[in-house]
Amino acid sequence: MKTRTFVAAVLFAAALPFTSCLAQAPSAAGASAPAWKYKSHRLSRDEIDGLLSRPEKVLFLDVRRPDELIRYGSFPAFLNVQNSELEKNLAYVPKDRTIVTVSNHAMRAGAAADILTARGFTVAGAVGSEDYEHEGGTAVRHIQAPVRRAAASAPAGL
Image (tube, rainbow, N blue to C red):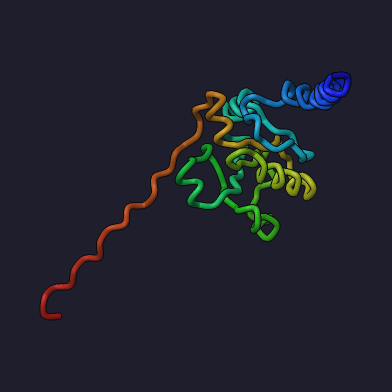
């Protein structure tokens, strides 16, 4: 009986650190979201809304693939450069605007924000477009895929 009590006490004590981590986890990112490991700030919905109110001063740099932009949309005034191509294309990123990096759940955006900050760009932080929408944000623009039309048939006899 004493052994069972001891084992139960050890298991209970081992579980305590995990329950405190769950209490601190952000609800918008979900319980399964990986921990934030970037130096750049992860922006909240309110922070994004404030930046969107000054569109002439901000650039949303979306680091997702084109198919993700079509599927999930992006913010107005965005530039799309995939993470794998970012360092090769830094010359095209304006230095006169505050930059917000965008991905689906801000992980790739966090990596891009750290790269830009290290290269001297002014970076407000990183955001996930899906996270922003789940928090009630509505500024994400959904892009329509181009409609493919059938090739015009050639006139008979040619």
